[in-house]
Length: 349
Image 1 (spheres, rainbow, N blue to C red):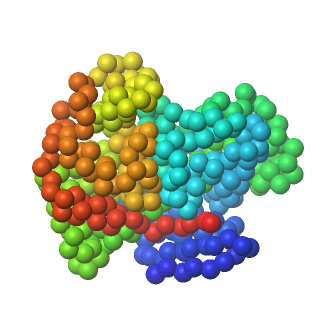
Image 2: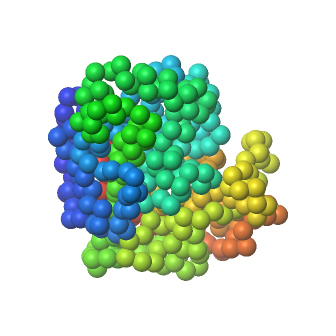
């Protein structure tokens, strides 16, 4: 059931379903996700030993997430690119835009269900949310700060932050690690399960998905071979193998005029990793256009057609790629199935 109401000029949408923790972006409603059972269809949440997940830390992380104080010129926050009502990504731009209007190299990935990620960024250069947290803050084409200390100085002079950090971590607690822990805690609360597919698959609700979506599932798990990267096996799935593949996107984009992007290779320097990128989750994928690591495809129909045609003529393309011989109706059914992966989603307008 969905309830829609207004609080302090903010449109708040609350989705109520068995197994999902409701997070409505108002202070009174922020709760700690159940790490063992965060939502129907989702795996458990693993919290690093040196991190924390309490209500006060989540609230602190939320304030930091939406605060432009974290950027050099106070024009950009995490939510500037990870827009809640756009699936915690940015629908109107193929690539993110940071301070001074600088355009980033890649498309903004969703933060929904980021709690379950084995690695962060499309090239996997961070192994945890805590390790990831400061990279956008210090990136010259994102928040543009030149040092951690200048950010901490700005936070430390704010009386509200002084109180919140003390309440969450104790005295003299405004430091690099605690900022990362707070931001990570908030993002771990952004869980989304209980999709029509989950109800159809896990709870045997025959009417949860329509006939077209059910045909799309059969194609997804069969002829279309989507499951090879977007895994569907197990009691809790993210529709991702958390691995890196070259599906021909970067090679195609470069031929069309984009700058070179070697993906995972830039981190590992292993030749087999050239132009490989992390498999994204497909949960809530209809909310997170445009698609691919560079935002080069605008619709899910375009994405499925790209794979149906075998990707590109990249000489290093993954061996799992190849023409799929899908009909127009097949493509329509697969897209309908992808719509059925939209889960319980708290939004803030």
